[in-house]
Amino acid sequence: MNTNDILYKIQKALRLSRDDILKAYALEAYKMESKDLDALLKRRQDKESKLCSYEELGIFLDGLVTLKRGPSPKKSTADEVIELTNNLILKKLRIALELKEPETEIIFSLGEAELSKQQLASLFRKEGHKNFKECSNELLNAFLDGLDEFYFVGEAE
Image (cartoon, rainbow, N blue to C red; front, side):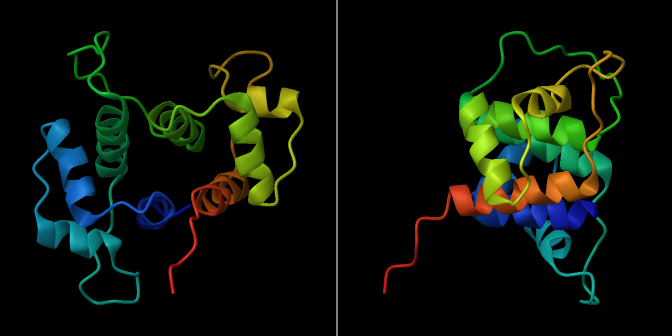
């Protein structure tokens, strides 16, 4: 799945302002200019659009965790490179939003992906575990769509 689309869908689902996103980047000591963020959130068809790197998406997700939950006392200061996978994106969102299993199950079902408890748990296992299941682009997309529904509050008219 396209990293720009993931960033856009998270912003839309959680109703994050540009300031919220910039603050998330700042919490991770990453210099993100407002104009650069605007370019990341533009649709691919727009000529001012800029591709969001996996690093930028990962830093945003780390900042979102810090923004929503506060700084982690266990956070390592070592700059270890971890590949950003769909499974890791799910984990970071679950941590940031403090989602428990029932909420996660509801979000997937709102995104029209029915998963058993075992299938759901397998998405959050460590890679290499015998019951680990790789999260497909379709499952991540269903989760992000469900997240939008889960946090939808309706429009005041």
